[in-house]
Each structure stands twice: as C-alpha cells, then as structure tokens.
Length: 116
Image (cartoon, rainbow, N blue to C red):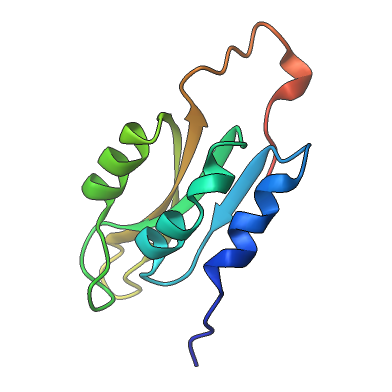
C-alpha cells in the first residue's frame, strides 16, 4: 500500500544546518516530492533520485524530464546506478541518479563530499 508523505515535513527539514543529501524513492511520485521540497533543495548539496526509463507507474515523470528538472534547480548529474531490471529480459527499467549542486567544488573541501 502506498504511503503518503506530507511535503511540509520536507520543507521543515530545510531548517537543519548540516543537511548534505536527500534520497528520494517514492515509486512514481518523485516530481511531487521534489516540488514539495523546494526549500530543502536550497540547502542541500546532493540528491539521489530513483528514475524510470519506461513508464512503470501512472503519471510518473521519466528520467529525461527528471534530469531536466534537476538541472533547472541547479544540480548536475554526477552518477547513475542501475536499480531495477525486468527479471525476464534483463532490461534496465529504473536507475538511481546522483545529482550534485552545480556550484559544488570537490577540490575546495574534499571532506564535504555527500554520502547517502
């Protein structure tokens, strides 16, 4: 059964001083969670998103659109990790994208690298 998460709890997390990363795996509702987390995104360095390559859930936003949305929010795609394959064919259906704030300079403070 899907669980509903109140986006105001994500916005309230923006008051945390040491927030470095945000992982999001909500089965097709990633765009809605990100929309509700606008304040949080202003205060974090990295976001991990589960993204579908093909429609798996009604109304979900697919990987190309999620990439474009994160770029528009000031994040660069740094890494991709396969996360879900069709067991019969082996075709990759979902992957995790690691997005890092565009202004991040890892050479400035290597200890500031985000961890999930």
